[in-house]
Length: 219
Image (cartoon, rainbow, N blue to C red; front, side, top):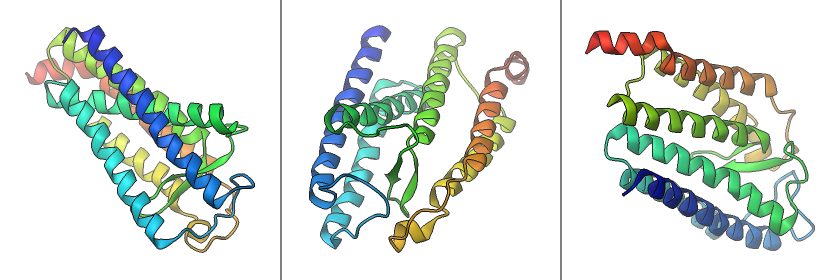
């Protein structure tokens, strides 16, 4: 498939899938938060929790699948997954804003994910990560298409791991708010931006001129 047609297809899938995801949340909020979604969280029926867990797992499978189908090398597959996931994530909030006029601000809190424990945080956090993932995915595809391949230096991997640990802990540390339905503690923006800084540093390392020369030397 022509690369531009492929990109349009992935974007359209991601935007449409985001609407499907947001529509489910519209029904859940109408059921459990008829007065409007606010913290502290409310208990949800066991049956609904199980359905939600499988729905979120299925969501990841579908987004991985679109990346797998769109790419031809393992890095292309990863890049398309990153792009599709990020567009889906951003448009999830775009559709909720269009339907429910929520979030009222990018600093509104949301339940971001449920596996393996609930993740909570302000909307701006996953949106910033999604923007960075789109940039990273596009750069990987560009390197794959123009230079015949991409390889991440070891330092970039370590920075990505450090960033992931910081960001995930910032989302999951407040177990009382997610498991005991208590009011949430103040979000650790500082830890999130430390993690985001690690991610950004990994991106710079992966696509710097020096890493390119090292890759060529290794070849």
